[in-house]
Amino acid sequence: HQTGLTLPGGPAEADELPHHAARRHTDTQTGLVLPLRKILATDHTPTRLLPEALHFVHWGGRLSPAQESTVALHRPPHTVTAVHWLHRAQLADAMHPDHHRRTTHALDALTRGAHLPFLLRGTPA
Image (cartoon, rainbow, N blue to C red; front, side, top):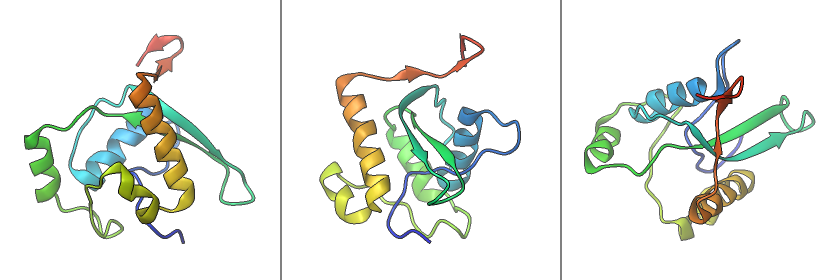
């Protein structure tokens, strides 16, 4: 069991596209439905730590005040104990080191304006 805060997310179902899984988990956990068509980072977890996985960090855009209110009013599933807004400087103390490193690289890519489009058979999703 990992401790610390994480980004919204979870595994994809069989034959579920990664951005659809990310959208579904983000909606379930936060109440937000975001496009998630840009990838800021990918991270591979080897089998020796967990079931092998490829993690995508998607960019959902900057939240509007109405979206922030949606999150505040949303009732997430019991597996989500709380939703927090943190300044980047607070993340190291609040997140598991692996999640913090993944988040830091994603935020660095965002700052540089770097992202990868999510493609389906060569066409933007």
